[in-house]
Image 1 (cartoon, helix red, strand yellow):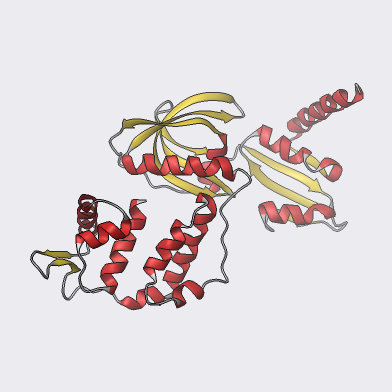
Image 2 (image 1 turned 60 degrees about the vertical axis):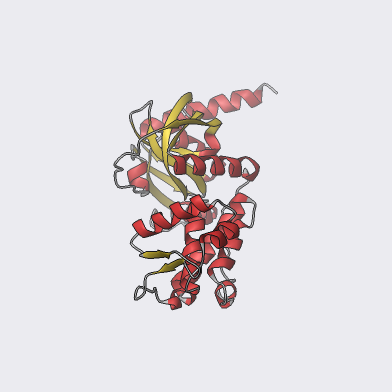
Length: 303
């Protein structure tokens, strides 16, 4: 990917006084024209690059503007490298490991000092997820629209979007961008995107609003829930919602209070606890939940 190449080029320029465009083109397996565009992008980022012609010519960072090389051994850089390693768990390749090796030329301690950190971003859907991520990354870089069929609790709908961000949060991958059907910014879960295609239809990048991944920003709380859990479910409540969502009663039971966005998600979640939970509020939903349970019971009574 382009960003990987830019970081790699900058790393080489930090460690060598001068290099040639043919050298960089061969190292990154791209054309000299691509390298020239990359150098322009690095300059636009505020790092002054000088190119000189002639027998001893080449590409270098402007004299007097040298970034401190201790950057490559700093704790911050080690954290970045741990993050890069984690991306290989998604792509199924070792291209980010190779990028790390380029970044740490002459200083292998950067690669070994953070081996105690392992971040795995893959999922059960890795075989279908990796191609989607690669397709979306390419569309974002080229400013090309995506089309897909999206599955939600409201049914299936055809969508077309301008993709801007790939996001990993809440243990899942999402793409955030401008949905042409809704004329607004939306976030779509990759696992729910079917028939995903790059339309090759270019779009003009928009002035983006501030992106926030806070749950209260992404999911409007519509239902305030109070439920009573058996003590044996404490581990699961803590795992899914933390320790601030419940109060332990004198009998050991857990009084749980939290906000939910969708009734369907709430019912599915409660039913997954079996008889280890009782919904107290809202009372109107208690009746609906009882109705759902009766329908489930009727299906099994037939057998």
